[in-house]
Image 1 (cartoon, rainbow, N blue to C red):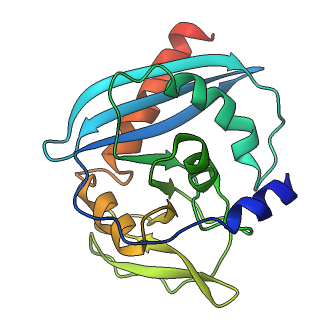
Image 2 (cartoon, rainbow, N blue to C red):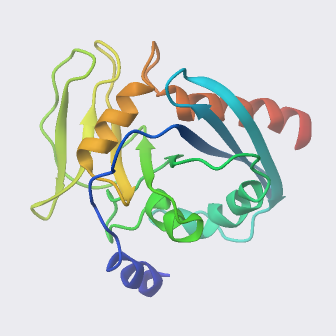
Length: 209
């Protein structure tokens, strides 16, 4: 798994996204015993309205190992991806992107399968050092690892804990910050992954328990 991550990391492109996305998807997974459910919600970027919802359920074949979530989660996510009724321009993942020891978090790894620009949104830090950002919504600082910028520590709401965002692939840090802030309404977690998470919890109760 390390060799796969290291090989793919050489192909990651942190480059500026051209234009403004029109359709954006958010992904979240939830686990229950030996099964998992993957949910993809798709929004109209401008209006923040939900336009598509899809999910898939399958058995989990890889145990949890920090730094290797893609191998556990992507097979189930890709089953949900096959059911999409519209094609997103960008996909957000509840997890890390470039902010990973080998620069190959879930969001980054997924980009090679779906061939879309991706962004990772995590509620906690995996690696790196940062200076605490200000306490107002929109305040941020950069996350560094081995003297390389790998992510952004973003305050999404006044006086709440920041979230950790990072580009996955085919967009840059400015894009990741701008597009994430667009989905920050009144909660700590941006709507694009918050709603996906709410659906995983709801569907898990209906489908998996």
